[in-house]
Image (tube, rainbow, N blue to C red):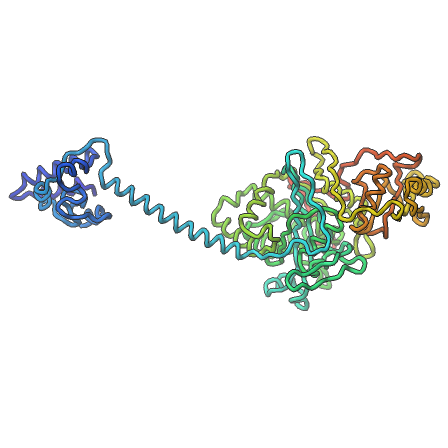
Length: 602
């Protein structure tokens, strides 16, 4: 109800002083219609009181609404107090010399007061929200677990920035099979392993290009045989010695934490790793739930369980289905029932899942829903262990913003090329080709606008020995599928090195490998400088100097590209992704896992 209508009703009630009341009401009604207010300055200049203090009363700042609710006159009218009757206030206002003349074009005092109150209230609300937001931000930060980035005793230099000053970003994603909680134990099964040393059963290197145009992902099967370097646990100082020979890569997590898995990757690939992100069983389930389900596809009905009880328990009908919660975890863990039942098939299924999750987040705009965003923030921060470079919500958000720039069609998922060694696998030459492309920031989808110049190699940690003290073995690797080994090449090239001052260069005739390109291999970082020196003298490019566990010292393998002559000319570099990497494009929403007929149902 408006002030004018209240006053009008009072006037219609009548009384012995009706003319005076009517005059006062008419003036007040004019004020309400004109939208003007008393001139405070005019009142002060005439020695009277301002309208806010007329009649000796200081008005309550929130009196407008109470006055109306009580049926009386609002306090910003002449001489008014909350609850005063207008028939009594009008004469009092005139006696007090109240200035009733209005200045056109200004808001009523009540309106200005409302604006002031609104501004103050809004400021208080924002302050409260800011405080609550800060507390919630700190709560999310407190959810995140932290661990050291690299526990190894050797480092790999960061890549050289491109012409625009940009550098690529490499993040190692680790899936732990930890059974260190009741929830993890129930999801992971194997009650007898509750509280045991966790294994890094999922390992994926995410490479974001320097110009942020493309992303490459390289998975390493958990049973890949590698040499784990010496690692020191940052919590208790325990030193884990380097592995005695090659062991499964998933054991690296138990050598002090995820920082040892990072060190193992760097030793094997020569790729500088900037960050790691680790998640366990329960984290996968909670994050899948928060996202709302991820579509996956099988080409036949599947039940991942054999007669001995082996398998993840995944049961899906043929076609595409959204999976979340425990079913999402089953998908990511399934070997029995997918293709050949190997860890390679599992890696392929994981790639499909991650590609689908990226598309789901983009298409459904999950971040536009505050409730989903809050839940995802809670679950994600509680599920993660990260290095100090990612240990706040802001840092994780900045990273996700970088990754979000890449369109799905520029994301390439690959599996490290490998071959079987008994029941395990080992990297192949194609694996080194894949690692080189990542090191040199070459897109795995083959869509780079132009060939990037070879980057300047960083200086090795250990410089080369004098040439005459540097031992080199030379092998003849010129054999091809069509041609036998070129006779005498190891002796010829070893002689060239001796002539160049490498007195300890010798031919190794016991091994006849097959190499398309001439390479120099070395087994450990302390020999990298020696290997580079040999390559430099012969004109072998730095990209063909490779670390390898297949050699015991600096070894030059003369490839099929140098079957004759004494001068080496490097062939044009092959920057294509090896077919054995089984590349999967991020925009491929037709990909479907093949089901082993032994694990189907009807």
